[in-house]
Figure 1: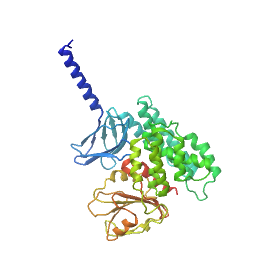
Figure 2: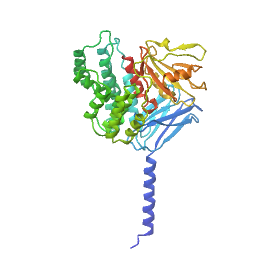
Figure 3: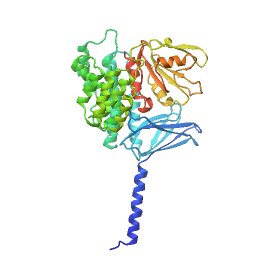
Figure 4: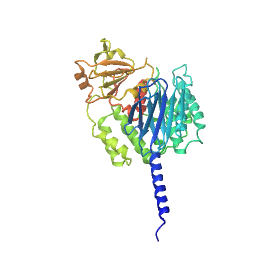
Length: 452
């Protein structure tokens, strides 16, 4: 029996409308306005797997002070993004497929609108609440722990207002990312340097009685594994738990085995990948890490993690290593004055070797704001003398000795990053690409170097 033609057409049209609607909802739309910014460049970067896959990006120019980005579909529940509209006009947040977000940058006001605004607003206001907590007057371990605990409380108070207005999975990712960042800093206080050090019994008491009760009550899951700052926190906690149980610092192999035996599923895959990438970036023992990577490739199930570690495993090579003195150099600055690496003894130094195609300006600019200029300095070495954007820190121009310096630092391509500790020794030989995770891992490495 034939169906009526009208009914058949209605069904076909209705089906096409549903397909088109589902397709449209897969995109993420970010629009906005920047007062007085007509013609200026605006860029957006986004990560589907922060800490594992590199960022994707789009660029545009402000037209009548407005911008518009349409991000393609990504097979993830929550996507992280960073928008840079120049100067202090930037924004970092999370969106789901199908979300829209409108940002209006006024002189001293940021207005958020759209169906993705709630999650972004929750994260933004939480970080602002933490920034308003005054720093302690004393720079000792108890004061630092108390400060981070107050920041945690301030952020939790803001997040609680959004608990019932956000989908459970999205709220879990936002909460894990915000609280995980502060929790990692709190645990790092265990290794905080002091004139007389910290006795083991004091560390145990601090960890058991003060830090553990203050850590966020977030259940580790495949959902929270989407938050890179939460992975950083779990890695810090794994190292602390191992130390408290074994009473000695853990090696790369020992922490790898600890994580492998305490976590399962996608969370285990991501946390192990994060630990291996961090250890490789910090210049850990190549043979040990190669063995760990080989074992990891035999058990990993997550495709993106497997791809990332396989690529690193194939590129492990000899060169400068953590702990050796940083090779010296002297390059001219923009005024022609010679600047020597030794001038910055006592500070943590991020060496950034770049060429004309470098894309790290947004990430390094944001990371730079996290540190005191008296403690951390960014040195940017322009290796081809082409015109380049103004980076925060010290900008140098390559001269005749550049080939020798690149060979000493084992640099074969740009951009290249090296972290030098306060003692003038190499602290990290291959820091993670800051565009891959909004700079979280690189900032953690610099922070750890400060605590040495």
